Image (cartoon, rainbow, N blue to C red; front, side, top):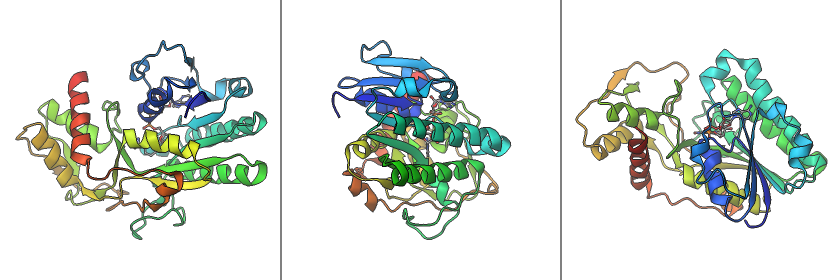
Length: 310
Ligand SMILES: NC(=O)c1ccc[n+]([C@@H]2O[C@H](COP(=O)([O-])OP(=O)(O)OC[C@H]3O[C@@H](n4cnc5c(N)ncnc54)[C@H](O)[C@@H]3O)[C@@H](O)[C@H]2O)c1
């Protein structure tokens, strides 16, 4: 993608900053971010001449003004935590659904070429029909999951009603440099790395044989760009298509850090699903393929980044 005007909501966050860094040299980027979890330093150069940063809540900006002259929108800002959405379902609806429909409305009014929406595998809920295909019915088990499913429907309806081109990308378990390790809702990989770097035992819930489909943040950023460049409209899983058990994950992180510390096993958490595994065949529709035999190297890169910021 070259010489395009691009808006990234949540562009200072974990995934959004990777997209921004990929596009910054060859395009003009506007980021809207309230810095609730984002960080200016996640950008390679936040003073870059191609970059405009609007530090604001998405619902406080004049979207029509921001979208004037924009070609592509990557929409990532959201309440991202499932437990937080359970504590504050109305706020989750406002931040995830209302903000999205307002953005879609502004996209139509400003003739945007395409919007790429960050959805989630949470939309599938507990579904044992693995690997999960995009045609499985949504089965949301949290306000967060419902908000993502709802946004996907709005994107489809805006495509049908107003020809607004879109792709909803359903990310599975994203990991990599810049993932938040301090959040009380931190994901499993930053949790394990952070605990071991501090010589503490990380917690594994259940027997550790539950599996997840991990995907590297660099691949997620590339999938976003490919989705924007493609002619495809619809929903695409973004994952590696590989099942990794939590016990195996812990073993690699522990070995990489030369640690002797054992994990502490606690009872399974209510609501945790046993296995998550994506059918990734739809990724070819956006012309994207993940390199699936790179997991250990990607983990090493991630560990090295966490070591730097400790
Ligand atoms: N990380 C994952 O594993 C994962 C998995 C599935 C889906 N997603 C989705 O991907 C997107 C990005 O997630 P992430 O992991 O990079 O999270 P993140 O918290 O690092 O990024 C979100 C960014 O949005 C900003 N933001 C939040 N609310 C805002 C608001 N109301 N107005 C303006 N800015 C706001 C935050 O400051 C942050 O920079 C989210 O929509 C999330 O639901 C992430």
